[in-house]
Length: 232
Image (cartoon, rainbow, N blue to C red):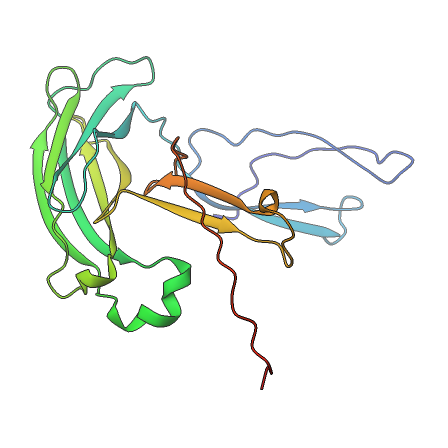
């Protein structure tokens, strides 16, 4: 409202710097505030800086999501959630609204070839429930592939679970979790230098669909290619 809420006086140091502090009154409305510096009383402002002050409400609780177990296409995937205060006091009886969106993922090495086979993201489930006395809730859904997807290309699907939890006081917090499912539950990636003279230069990783490294045996066959007589 263009009202002066505080005034500071000071003298610059040998480097021309000046510092100070002021308190915005608690009764002041949130919005834009301006800080103006004058070389002396009665002169025009030499510098002006604006900043925004918003109303802040300390959150009372938080929401966490975790996948329970594992599974592939055609299996039931389970997500367990917890609503609790920052001192780990359960938030029971809170309303949980969730939605699950399915999308198809192509590895980078297949995007140039199979980009036309991608299907559009689709919301496959949405519902509401309530947390129990321990602040827990459970969401289970069937990881079905999209009927329009080309299953011969062994696609991978992501299932994005979006959750909004509202307690009895009307405070709402959101959380999300991405689950992946495919015909195969792991993959191997290779890293090759520009020129390979021995197998020790070939680096490979064996991971699950969540990019977590796995222990296992990898068979790495090497075949000699037939050198053409002419490159043309």
